[in-house]
Length: 260
Image (cartoon, rainbow, N blue to C red; front, side, top):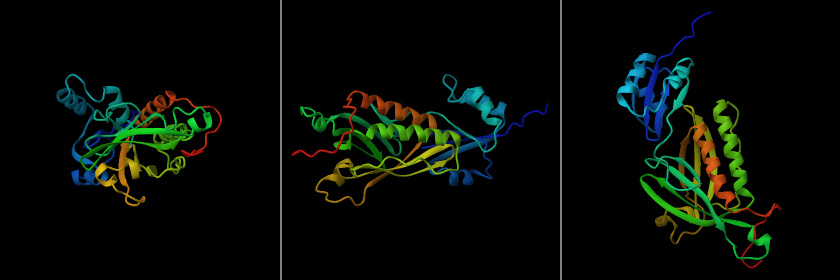
């Protein structure tokens, strides 16, 4: 039986995590061009050299174990990422890194929580969260999602996780259409074994200095969230947990205004 080829591995440090890859680069400048949030890179290392380096650099809690590295070394142009330890704090969906672009999103009740008519009570969710962009962090809270939409977002995130895991060349799954412009997901692509998710925050979800006195929906705050398949899956699970705290009538909800 032929012995499986073992590929050298390059370490790439980025603003949003640490990557090991068997992709071949001519020099560090080519690595920098491949990773938009690049900070530094080392290597390439042979398997035993990399194990020794990580044991010296992370004596108590290495970000990758020997099995991860051996599995990676047997594949060409492959990537593995250490989970981000710098996610936003709090409940709900958490993607990105607070050192770069990040988003936390959670369901925080009903807009018409005291209404006796279930059609009205179950029409709009309050959405709360926080974001970071270009070194600025801010919080927001608004009735931005109809009650039928958050479960669809969870389903989209789970399909996105499958798409990233498969490293498919097909188009990414489309997010559900959102009636309010506060939150939109206009673009998704794959890069270096992760999803890059563009998020537009508008109106009441903008930073306070851009929100006050604002009219119209032009010039949203645009985040780029980079996440592994595992991080996308966890975001879906954590967002679903906040939805479950505010269950709605199984009948389809409809947008309702304050005077309906």
